[in-house]
Length: 118
Ligand SMILES: [Zn+2]
Image (tube, rainbow, N blue to C red; front, top):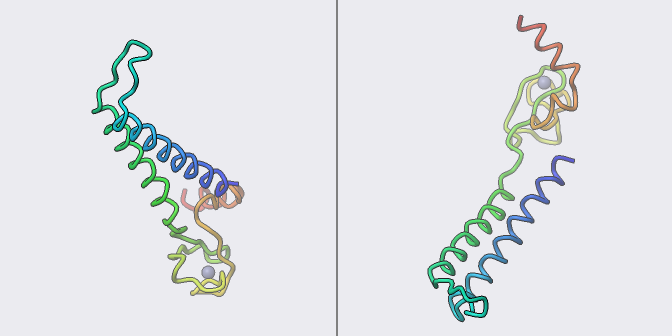
């Protein structure tokens, strides 16, 4: 669920970026017409394109950030996802899950942890 939201967010940044770049290029090349009585300075086109590139990069780059951490269901240690193979805990061979959203999926463990730490 969270993943698809992120994908959607990234996609909208990419689409927004491309649109901004296109509009920027149109403004730079043709100028925004005087049709409406307002002249849009060419600078706005460059700004628009720059924003577009920024959006586009954001959308593309965030996509490449992997899920960084996993947590073991048994010993509750967290590890870099790249250090874990086949979803087995390197310490106890327990099952690992993504740390991201872990306590949302297991609210009972959050309670447990809170009680332990007090
Ligand atoms: Zn473990």
